[in-house]
Length: 116
Image 1 (cartoon, rainbow, N blue to C red):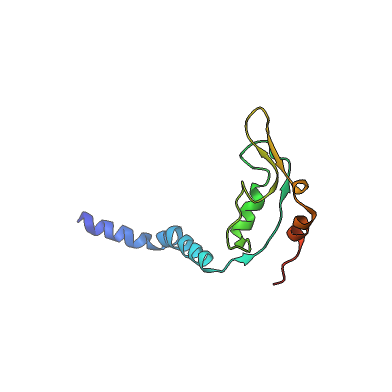
Image 2: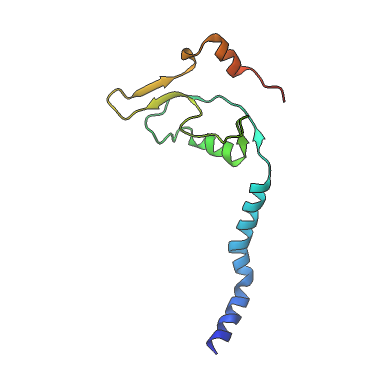
């Protein structure tokens, strides 16, 4: 008797379960199948006070959500794919990696548009 009641309740809950579980899984499946787009950008941010990188986390989330990838095919990494301040958490605070450490030829190659 109890099994039959459980079956009836589950049968009535099937549409709700579909919307709660099936629809998000279906949407995620479509997102994973869609191809990514190549976009080479240079992010310079010298306002990073700690290793949480929250100042530019939204930009990296947006790039990865919209499936923009580097020309190598890799996704953008919040703690690696930018130039600027890299906090160490030590007394020296950290280091700055910016365009001053690159030669003029390297800067031109970074800013040069890739034909697509």
